[in-house]
Image 1: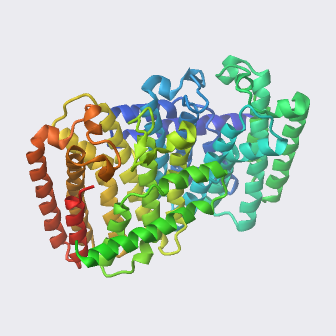
Image 2: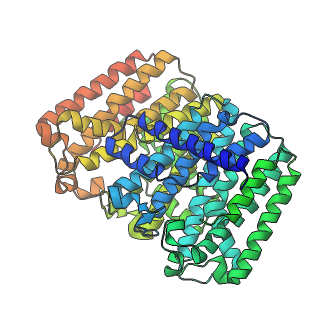
Image 3: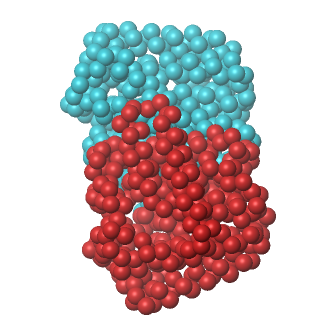
Length: 294
Length: 294
């Protein structure tokens, strides 16, 4: 990793980490609800979605500050999805990033409501942003709702549940990932592009860049689930295997999965090249995402 | 009930009933998810929130059609809240309006995701509405997120859960209802007023009208829970009592609750009078809401 990238990731992650809880602290709501929302927001993670959003704004030569509200709203939605996915009736996970999951700490009812609260509040954060014109807000809200809703992330989670204990085709697995995680990653880049005033053609190329990067990211996740260890990835290795979920290494072999991961990375780079932006930072982030070891 | 009101309620309920499923049918999403979302949307109810929204537009002399998308989005949010409230970890209800609750039919995981999907999609419906200018959409989305989120409905549900098996003060009970059900009823009227171009003073008076009407509505709900019967209210009579929840009749006696209900209705009428609008229809709706027997 270059020093440029290292500093960028560190700075922007810190920026998000510091700002996220502020949005929740100022809400007038029962303390336990706010505590539970902040607990999961602070559970950390790499903040890849906000960083992709910032880096896209940067690649189009604009100030990342314009995107802070949307980046935080996006991370709220990502966090809500993790809280709900971890619930006993869903993936039934006790640990997330090495810490007890939200419902393990606050109970199921509060965990569901913390998720509902984060999802709902994210739209308020965008609607109230001081940085964006109304026309931009409406576009971003529409894209975010599409990416996170039934045609996006929620639909992907349903497909994931329906696919348990079945051997899926690669196409079916792709459908799941393109929706469950892919749509929100694409939104990160598309939102950054909208905020920075990208042309329709730039928007199209950056969206395709994000689509292929998202798939590479997910295949890498599956590979790490086979090859990683519990300290690195924060959950038991092979935990997907235990639930008889289809993964790329299972369907394609470990070698095949690695090959597909690299192909997707190359496609991502091709579209980034076509987008006609200052591409260095996004290129480094793409490489980092796919070459990470946790 | 006058024929005017009877026809209005019938027509507008039918309009909502016919349109609501159309918004979901056209989404590209797994069938079971769409089925589950439509199941709860079609479970019916009185559609009081959309009707209040339409009647407010009407009272300001505008065409209700301008509010159809927002009315349907509002009913989606109301429906999501019922699905999540009924879950085993929340109120654990098997019946809703005389029909099995969503999780009883589709299982807990799909029920949670159907709720998440309805909530998310409602914001897309408003953002994509052909009837409203961007400035109006942003205002409405912000108000809706505030009314439904941690500072509104979600916060009220948390307070309700925390209040179980405790004897609350009337003030604490009021906090719960003002948030759990009141904020969304107020949003119905406020959104109608925004859509119809109300002045700031009209907006303020109509909001206060809705605030007091909402409280009267909720007290009436508690009274019906004591006095009604299962065919009329679609759930076992006294079901709130079973869970040791505080209710107005318990805290104030049945007579005291009826008195408070009437006082709130009078306050609602006072503010409606101040709003300087064509008030007949809203007045009749207010009377109807408080004098209903189910």
